[in-house]
Image (cartoon, rainbow, N blue to C red; front, side):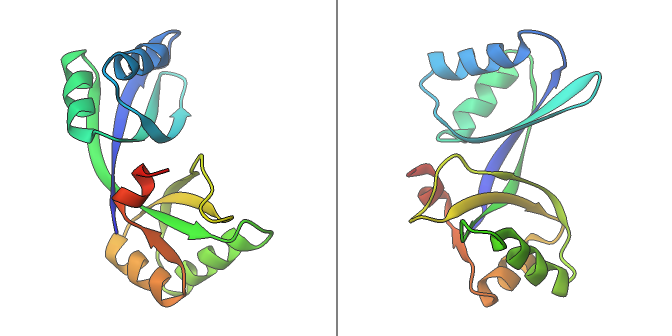
Length: 143
């Protein structure tokens, strides 16, 4: 039910993002979801890829600082109030959303969001009890 994600710390300067995507492209690695956040000095690129071990190794070999963590891919209705419903269920159980980003593909007419929670097991349990579908890693990579 959890999906492993790569976080890459990169300098906030021209060409660094292109360098990463070029490394992945040359090595046949497919990006399934991504998020990029920045500050004045650095950025954090979060990726879900089809080969996490190879991606981690390649990026480290090329001098990037790389970490991994677990996130949850949640299917929710692609309509007004879809996100409000999921956040309400989490709030009722006092589960904090550390960050989230949208997936690039729809699932059976629904949206897919990627979440990082401070209590991942509690979040999964809460969401399942509230009737939300949690995608497995294989399902995320299949899009």
